[in-house]
Image 1: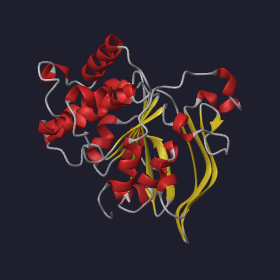
Image 2 (image 1 turned 90 degrees about the horizontal axis):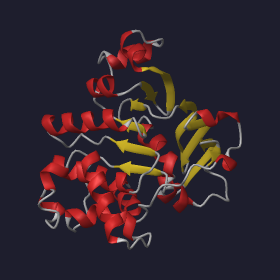
Image 3 (image 1 turned 60 degrees about the vertical axis):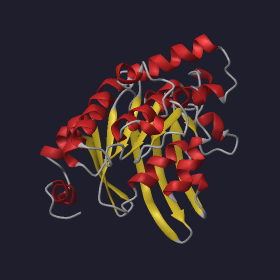
Length: 279
């Protein structure tokens, strides 16, 4: 299923939707993301059980919890990647900047212009480094070579990769190391300038040095982007996130500032998970 989603996502890398006050539907537009009583089923199996959450702009929010708890399913609701999964059904509301993204009139391709995604394993295209980053711009019909070159350079610099590859932009992306490939995928996402970046365990396949570089990058990127990251790494969640949400068996057990979650959680389940007593 994850592979099918990756393939589908690679076909939908687009540019940013300009912020339009006219699309605001309610008073929650101060929140970047608002989910209200969200429930998800895959056939008869209920994966998400009535979750509500608000995420403010320019923050990093970590989703934590044991495998199978629903955190990746919930993450993929924000750019409707679960639409590709057979027998997927969803109830409730998810609003981005006040707009319910599950309304029938919503154009999913337009939604994904505003919501980028980085997957667990690096998935560079079998193209050059330059063409990987330029891909999303070109499929939109952008042909201005100067504009594309400037955007590629900017994205590679944002992803802290420019100095390492600036003299080898024609080199195959597949020849890069795993950590470099993941930063390239982040650059590919940044090139089309989304407002929200979703990351599904982006460092789980990387070595400690590469992981540290990605974490530093995430910390810098929140100045311009709203970031949600799924991670199994408790230390990572505590280092890079502003807020943390703990999921268990399809439910949101606790959501608070990261410092509170890790030092003074309200729920015993949260404490048990954070301290390694289960999960």
